[in-house]
Image (cartoon, rainbow over all chains, first blue to last red; front, side):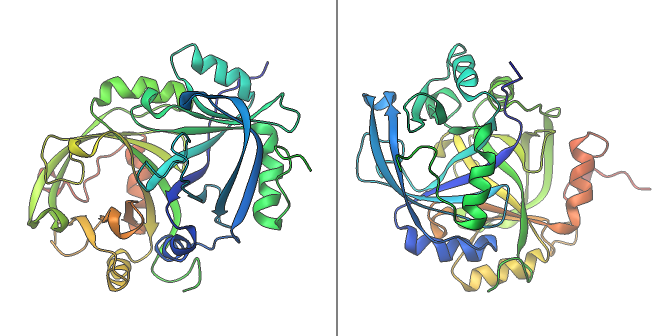
Length: 171
Length: 179
């Protein structure tokens, strides 16, 4: 197995209450252009820290900067309290996203050192870990999202060309 | 405003996380992020204003920080302080603190954002007490997020600081030896 450790920051994510209002504000302050808002459907998500161990579907409103990496991601907080992006948490810097060469191996490796999984997204077949987030309480209040390295091309085409992100969607 | 032009920022230089115990946090972040950090720096900043915290007269602060060797964007870790009226007060809790971006003309960029309602939380001053090597936005003016804008002329100094080959003396000038 190749070294699964992450090395580089792919994106920096901010959570906001109102995405439509936030985009022009961030575009101005960071001097960036954001792609159109997308409602991303994610078919299989587990959120073990919130008592939601069974895979369930979620929909998220988000936008990415065209400039990057590192890209700036803006996501809209949701009203569901048992969620990694619940609006019970404050707006602000939510997580950084990094690629891991072997994402599931990396998740297991960190788990053995006490880093729990806050959420995990599986592929459309429900087998492969596509991306996952660490529990903030296990890293000094900070949350890291690890994306499987195989997503590099798909994410790049999504940002630049508007291609759909279908790895984790039933199409 | 068109993206990428004018006096504003160009690229992200670092992402900063605030912690209570820097020495304890470094090995954990190294393990989880797969990066290595430079030696902890006891940074003396000779002149700082914190208008948002009602500290408008320049004064000196000392901070413990480190930065990943990998980057940009680098990962910066800073230690929180006990002082309540401070951009790094421990009362705000650990976690993501800010991102640092280069601005081509930092002071004009600060004024441009101020005109749009983005206030200054803190500002460092160079020896002339006029130019600002870096400054922070007030989080509540940008959907809870804090940005640090660094003057782009400091790129070289930062790069050398990361490798430990020089001190950040643009704002630590009180300790500089006369040549």
